[in-house]
Image 1 (cartoon, rainbow, N blue to C red):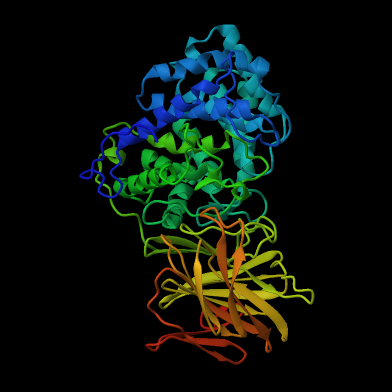
Image 2: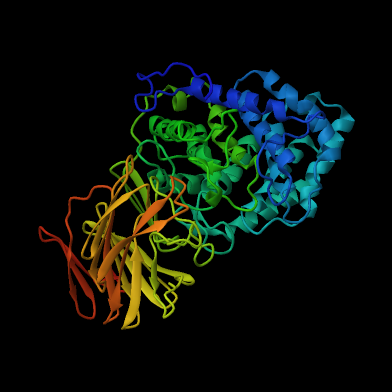
Length: 583
């Protein structure tokens, strides 16, 4: 760990961290990578595995340059940029060529943003030929096809910078217009974009799809009212995904970027485009940063590791290489707010609690008891993907690895003992009624509804009568299990408890081991209930953390009625509550 300033519990009663801590972490990350810089200055190739693109040296340069740029643009010492000058001069001759859907396009966006943020210190001091060569290299992104997702915004970042310098202006403006127009087709509502034309909803909303348009508007001075409005709406729900200590929701790909999850709240704090108070924003962001650094994000050499709580191969994607975690640089956008800004001077406040119903992406987000959780009836990269295609995710748990017993999963057990993936998801409705929230979807011939009541999730499924079914719950690492009838409870030191109860259509409960564990530790246990849905209904109760509401009874006809101890209840069909359109 880096040498850090003393905590300030008066200003930051929850984390103790201040702007000086963010500056110290940025400086420490930059110092740690220096031994790995190439002689020509253009590559920082860190120890560890190579990505499938093998552009890891350029990636190490560009992503750490973005840390230095945010630090200097926020008033830090300009000499932090000195090691990068030679690399910017030599880079066009040694960096990999940009090509269709190839990693250098991603890194060009970080180079462009870094140059834009620090223009008086670096770009303006380069010679005319040096600027021309660098501009020509960056402009090659305009000639190639991005991946059809957040990648459309990388040419926007490059175009914004080059247009500001007077280079490649026509091509830059065309790329900006084209990229911003393409992501309009990804926007689904409630502040959420899909990361591409499908239904992949994840952290790329915050650290890419909102990040680049907002930063483009900030640096160019071009008004971006629609994007500012969407960021504000997004943060209202997204902020609930962070745990009470600031740890981010574990869901979606590229989780090795860790505290990059704080990028959107920080940028909202800088621009004022946020529903959060400055004290709540800093509490989330500093909590995310501190939690990562105190839970294995750093190696002994103070390098960011590939994983989550330390190295974790199952957390990674084929494109993940040794420098990939440094996209966490985006969280340092908060340094653009000067030291006297309320983002840094307001007293920390607790992170938000409550419920957000997001019907367009098909998500429910609940923050209670210090746990952020997401109930998923709409996000799916492809069927069976544990990072997108599970029933629920949280800030305190992670999904099990592909090929092992899946957590938070419902499937039909086939004759050979295999369990089906849930198929292509079709979200239906989501809403709240009385003291309940609910979301519904269908997939692979299964109709599903989740009802939230406090920390309890009732998972209701409608299948072909006579189907053998299996439901799993929240996985915990290094857990012990207690099984009684159709109920299984898991406990694990330092983790919230996990409980799964078969209420109807299930006959037995068990705890199954996932040897590779989760990003939070290994091995893991997964609670499971199984049975035969004789009449086509299968109902289970899943709880993560404490819930004092008790176990509901289930009455079955052509619909399901749930009744909790104390009298409140809800009647629903496979499409949702009977009195809320679910007929």
